[in-house]
Amino acid sequence: MTNVVTRATTAALAGTLVAASAVMPASAASAVRGVLLPIPAAGPGESLAVTAADVSPLGVVAGTARVTTTGPDGNTSMVETPYRWAGLPRVGWQRQRLALPAGATSGSVSSITDLGEVAGDVTVDGATRATRWSITGTTATLIGEPRSRAGAVDPRGATWGVSTAGPELISGKAELVTRAGARTLLSGTPELDAGYRRYVISINATGTALVSVFSGAGQGTTARPVLWKDGATTSIPVFGTAYLGPACVSRVQADGSVVASGFSVTAGLPKYVLLRHVGGVPGSNVVLTEATQGQPVGGLVCPSGQTVNNLAADGGVAGVLTNASGGRNAAYWNAANEVTVVPLAAGELSAQGVAVANGRRMVILADGDDGTNRLSLWRDGVRTELPAPRGWTIRSVVELTESGVLIANVQDAAGTIRPAAWSLS
Image (cartoon, rainbow, N blue to C red; front, side):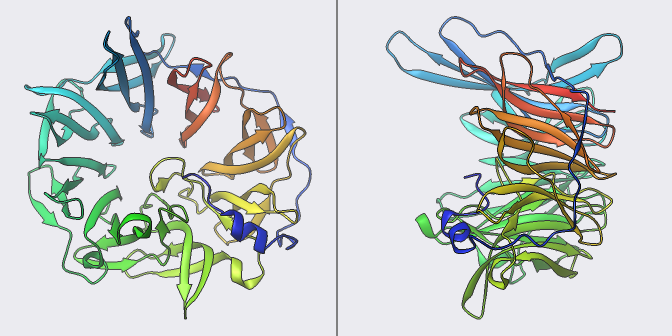
């Protein structure tokens, strides 16, 4: 579920004028084509999907290779292998297969530290176990019980977020685990105890954790983001459901700020909001757009999971706004909450901001009138086309680093998925 604005919400606001700062038509810079990251070869009867999950500030990429094998009887089996990639001067991109601990049959990754340590899980005796990999990538340490996963790690590698599934579908726990093995159970506050499952999805350098709290069942399952700091919590006032779509929230910045979009209910009135939360715990909220006030529908785009890289350290926000005809434009909010709507380029039917970096840099993913996805960099009014490697199309954008490395996942006509990189420095 990647759509941040439902059809019903868009229809209700059709004809609403976009209230935005004045913009000039974007200039164009020379195109920068992406390059493919190296991946392992698929064997006979195998299909391969290699997906980048996270990127360090130095441009080290962490991801997972999934090999699906179809046997002569038609039955399939799947094995995942964790990888890292680094771009070396005069050599190019190199890949490293991360080591699996003894007894592990597969592994996947979710997050990476500033120095390149990787968080994720491995499968041992048929159950996943939360895992951290060393800086060298040659050793892996189990840091969770069976049915656990490390979904996040802070930039320094001091604290790892471990979530463990319980014996029943609607049970489980979440913990913060230090490098020395000290464990802090995330429970005991009204916000955390409001659900039956909790997942740690982001941790900043000062130990502020972003936790997704699940409640309800079936189509009524609801996920709400909660910030935790030193035992205190505050709820970010948006929620997502299986029916309405997810609540998207950015990773936690060093100052404890996040941006989020989703549904909210005040005095029984539902509304779709895009907001900025500042000040960590408890902090305060600034609403950027709110559908029930006649403003355009604004939001974030989360192609996988709930967290996105749509908030920069300087306060810039990348997102999307509906326009007067119900279409969508990429939009950028600065730290003062002033919005700039980016006009559609020739051949674009709609567009959305999907990643951001300091200095008014935003990655735009657009739907072309030829049926393809188009990627570009918007930098303070200047658009740079970012074509995919030849023969490939854009599947999802992972991150734009401050040094100008853009990582996205691409797909070819055969369905093979692999990471690609753009150097935008």
